[in-house]
Structures are given as C-alpha cells and as structure tokens.
Image (cartoon, rainbow, N blue to C red; front, side, top):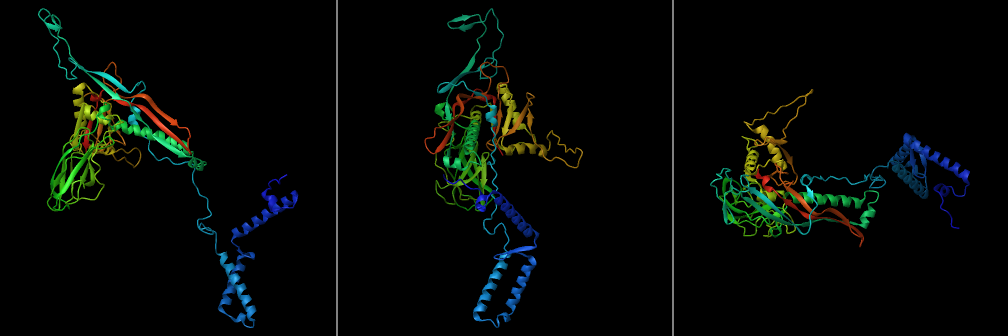
Length: 549
C-alpha cells in the first residue's frame, strides 16, 4: 500500500513514537518561545555560527575588533600561516557583527517586502446610476408589428386650440340656413375639427458584454466577474436609454425628425484686444444635436486688425440645434484645415487666439441615427408649445421671467400646465444665484442660527410657482442635460381627455430583456434587448429654453 501522507510533526520528529513526538514538539515550541522572548527583550543579539549572545557580549567583540584594527602588535611573533588564519577568523567575526545590524524591515531581506497584499474583496462601484427621465416616462408593452400608428384630434370649434376658429352659438331658427350635403336646412351652424395621423417605426436597442473564462476563474475569491458583467451591462443599457429618451434623433424616413440642418454664420473683427495676427482666418461652425454634430456651416474668412479678436455669430440657428462647436484655421490657413477651438452656448462667440486642436471632422451628419427614435428635447424643439433661444444670461432684474413667459404662452396656446423643469448643473446654480444678485427680486434670504454659532450659506431654488395656474413646478438637475438647456415637461394633460393618459410614453413590442448566450467558445457572452419606440402624443404641452449662458 502506498504510504499515507505524514503530518508536519511526523516529518519533524521522524522515527519517534507518539508520546515522544509530543514531548519533543512541546520542547521545540518552548525553545522557539524562549528565543523570541530574548530577542524582544533587546538584551540579546544573534550572531551567525555562534548563536544568541547578550548584547554586552556583542559590544565587547566590537570593541576588541576596533582595538585590533588600531594596532598590529597582535600579529608580532606569529608565523605567516598563523597570522593568515587569525585574520580570516577576525574577518568572519566582523561579518557576523555586521549581520547583527541588518534588522527585518519592509524592504529587507526581500526588496518588495515580506508583507501581505491587502486587497479588499469586491470591486468598489463608483459610477452614478441616475435615470430620472426613464423612471418618469411610462412604458406601454402593448406594441405590435413593426410600427405604431395613432390619430389625434387637435382642435374643434370654440376650443381655442388646433387653429380652429371660434363660432358664435346664436341663431334664428326661423331663418337660419346650414348646408348638409346638397340640402340647406334650418339647423345651427356646423362645427369644425382639426386632426392628424402619426406613425413611428419600432427600433431596436441593445448592448453586449463578454467574460473570458480565464478572467472568471482567475477572479474567484475576489469578485464574481460574470455577476459584475451582468450588473454593468444592465446599467449601461439603462443609462443609454436615458440619454436616448432625453436627446436622441431618429431618421426622417421612419417617422422621426431626421438630421439637424447646418447653421449659417457670419464673422467680423471683435474690436477688442487679442493676440491674432493681421492675416486671414477661415472659420466654420458645427451645431450639436442628438448624439453628434451637423454638417459644416458656410465657411467665412476674416482678416482682423493686428492684436484683435474675431466675433462669430450664428445668424441662422437650425431647429433642434442645442449648442455649437467652433473650428478655425491658423493664420493664412486653407479651406478644410480648421481645427477645434471651443464649444459655445448661445449664438455668438469671440476668440482672441488660435490653438491647434482636433481636426475638422468629415462633413457628414451624425445628429440623426437611422436606427433611433426622437427623445424629449428634439421633439419639443420641433413641435413644442413654446421654444425660446435665450442666448444670454437669465434675467437678474426679474428672476424667473423666462419661465413665466413660457407658462403664459403655453397656457394661452392649449391650456398647458407643466409638471416639472429639467436643467443642467450650471443653470441650476445660476437660478440659485438670481435670488442673491437681483436688486429688485421679491425674495428674502434668511440666515438662521438655531441654537449655535453656525449658519447656512447659499441658496437653492427647488421650484417656481406658475403665475398663471398657481401650480408649483419642480426644478430638477440632470447630468446628461445639454449645457444651457431647460426642458419644461407636461407629463399628463391638465384636463380629462379620452384616448390619452400620458403626453409621451415608451411603446414596446418587447421591453428590456437580458440574454445569456450559449458558450460556443471560451467566453460567457451576454446581451440586452428592447424592441419599441418613444411616442410623443402631445409635445405641444411641453416647452424648451436653449442658449442659457
């Protein structure tokens, strides 16, 4: 029979019976403990080939060696061989004493340190997962086929909406004549309607991830890599949907808005000091929209006064343009050599110097996706009840006037009564600062001191009261909101309406699903999938502000 594996104690004291092994092992532990106690006391030092010596003994050896080095009298009277042997022994003693000073440190006796690697199990997740637009947009899973179709009643007589004229209700039943086909009858005048038909193709959304077998097995004991992959894949999809529902643009042929048109620009000497040469500079501008940029604007050439700047103006801002990118050549540069200089909000920008930035991209549109749908911002920009390009700072003399103007116009158009407003972080800070900087604002800021010596500094605006309807409209910040934009949303119609509950929704043939693919190679593959679209039934009940600087 093969020999069974022995224990470490049996290997250490091989040949002894059980009781003797126990006795020797206890003696071994006692000797180790005594050695450690001596070392910890600081009164003993270890000398190779000698053993533990009192610290005083080591110092005596060092003293004797010093005396020997100071005098060569000891070698007098010794033969050459004896003197050589003595010198060899003394050298060994010096080496032994030198070894005593080599304490165990984080870098000795191993340069990388004989220390544990404190890797905490589980990767730390530092990615913010925020999907407020997705969370507040209903998801209808009754989609069928390849596209969804709907018809809308936009207006009728006396409703004041849809472009239908109002009619007087009065008549004289003895004389009134109203045409019904080929007959004129004594009936009240007939009312009118406004309707339209809409359609949108369903689109697909999805992402994938892959985990190599080696990566999975190597990660065991630290984190579950497959689980991490599924978690990351799910959130990547949800965040992608969030961006799409906010600002994506679909192709015109599929029932969507299509590409944003190119902007038209002009440029001139700024009349302000700068560092430009008195040479020709060529300039183009791209508008941003959806997930990309438009084709190039017209190219303009300006020769400024030496040490001046140049002001560029977007004279025609295309519908759906969110912001702009400025591209400029070097002094005397040729067409097509423009490089990126800056993003800008609003319709004007002034530059005083030129740096070599990224090259001008290919002259093709990337604002619309052939496989995409229209999100909130593009739809409201094209068909909203109120769209204004502020192209400047918010009013400090009358804080909130831009929003009150929107509320008033939207109410007068179709009785809209918005539910919330979404801004980027910069606009939220600007709104808060309005309360502090406005000279005639009807607000009061109170610094409170509740039982202590500390106070609270700063103002945050959390909403605004609609002066028309007296409804409080919440303010929210969105991490993906385009710079300088403010989306004013109505989630539901402010009056009872048949056939419609939500102003917008996700119409889905197949809602979110995750797929684990069969392993056909040394990887685990996973994907997400959604088949549907975003439908905007009533975009005219929402509004949009752009170009807030």
